Length: 326
Image 1 (tube, one colour):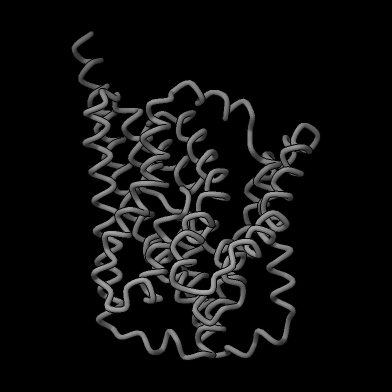
Image 2: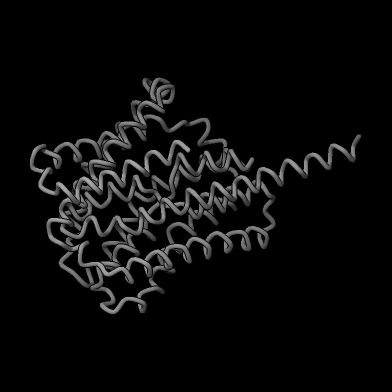
């Protein structure tokens, strides 16, 4: 339920951006968000628990399924959606959808949902953390590969920003983990408020630029419904596809839960950050976040519902086994 407050705050930020798009000039938001992005990944490296990360390393079969789904299957499914957009590679809506597909998995909500469903928690922690690390490189590579063919997207400039704003702070955080890691993990909830505040500022800034350019205002209602339908279809395709692959691979229920929940998630945190790093203050940055926010809300609601179903089924199965033993 706490995550719903964050979603509510996001929509408030979008509403403020709609009514006060020029409010962006009152504060140096670009500087604030640029510094905030660096601090997010510095804290990410600082909070990464080596013991929990190592505990999930050995379950290689689940790792392969999750990472291939996140960074290969999902982007390819988005590529298959290209004929649904009239302008093809030039379509801002399709680029926004592909950007969603190229993102890594979430960390916190994936772990929380797997824990709720009584799945394999060490495996979930390992894969959610690994996905975030891989996504730092994989997401820009995918976007660069697609956009260099259709726009004047300069990947070398993006790579420089990527190293300065994300990779360097992350490495510093990992290096300092042995000294300050326990303190960072102890105050993880308080530090996550900083992450969320930075994301809300990025979203406000992105949508302010889009509303000022009238880009989002020109989106037709039918396009919004089409995007929502595509996003929902992608979620269910990946979710049930992972269930099928898990059964085919002989995974137990706990590993299946980890695969389904980590493999279907997409990170709003990385999405918000990557929009700023890859596209700067471009007019379409708010539009690029649209599918991510639709998907983020959808995944929280649906995965929470499936997690509760798994939890109850697990409890019932245990109850029967205990009853039969007695």
